[in-house]
Figure 1 (cartoon, rainbow, N blue to C red):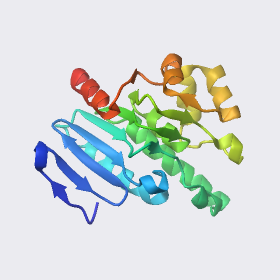
Figure 2 (figure 1 turned 120 degrees about the vertical axis):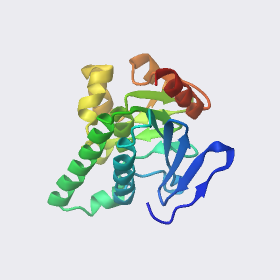
Figure 3 (figure 1 turned 45 degrees about the vertical axis):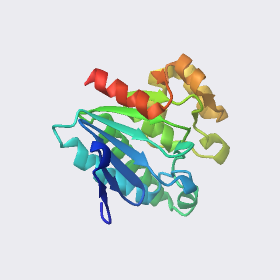
Length: 211
């Protein structure tokens, strides 16, 4: 990650990059999506930063947990639709495989992975949350796979992971209707493990207890 700065105040190390902010909390690292003005899209540029970051973090044996979160009222809004519209069929397939590979690397991480869902968690953003071991949600968090309204379907593993968590009938309904799910519904369905505010504190406490 180039063009970064470090802030050692409050015993935390903060690395600022174009799309991500990396915060170190002792044996836990927080990866914060940090393009709120653009609704934290998982664009090609963001995927590249995530790939580099995950590759660097997963080999650090002193780290016990990795937490993913967003900024303001958005966790992640998924793939950049404008980028998708410009893809050729071959490029679209490559983009889907790239996202699948990244999500699988997160799923296979030796560290405990937690999604601290602070707000809107849509499409590929939900796939990111699903790739984590555990999920904490803010009371105002909203979950959806809106692809049906756009004539597309997620290609980053959500079609496999969501049914495993909440069952095939409910997952199919979410995929086909593109309906939104509140944090309370997500907890009842088993999509999230906890609801807490601030949600990052909830995730950090969970990481401390389990690692």
